[in-house]
Image (tube, rainbow, N blue to C red; front, side):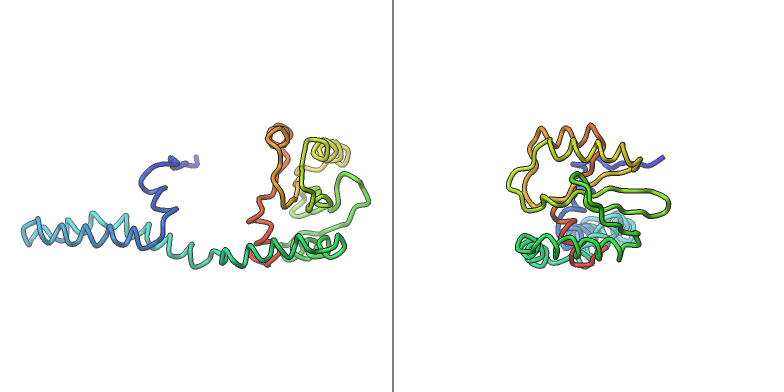
Length: 190
């Protein structure tokens, strides 16, 4: 059974905060223990800050691994300037680096077929630069997914997807690739 942390719990908030916030709490525990507890009990007071130290280390590690937001923004800007041929080639290479067997499709609904570990994913990305993304392209992708027997479908775009289209994608199990993930994919980050 997998445990899910509450979104606004103290530890969840600290995992979204800069690493030094948790370390400051650890320092507060240490100083408070030193100031308020008798000498033999100070170590026990300091131990109370250990969970915050763990959270601080986890957050520091994540921040160190996360790509620079400026690099992500530049990658998305470059993607918006690419021709279809360049963009589809970049995606094909990026998915290939992740271990997928990539096949280009000549379907109006899906552009790439990804196969990995026996599972098939259809990717629709031809409208990546479109200003509006409604339900129509997602309906076509869902139909193509059923017709090809694909287990998954992913829709790639740079612009906002309408609320109605987001609801439809959720109902049909179509994954809308977040732009940050797209940027990381194009940059070659896992």
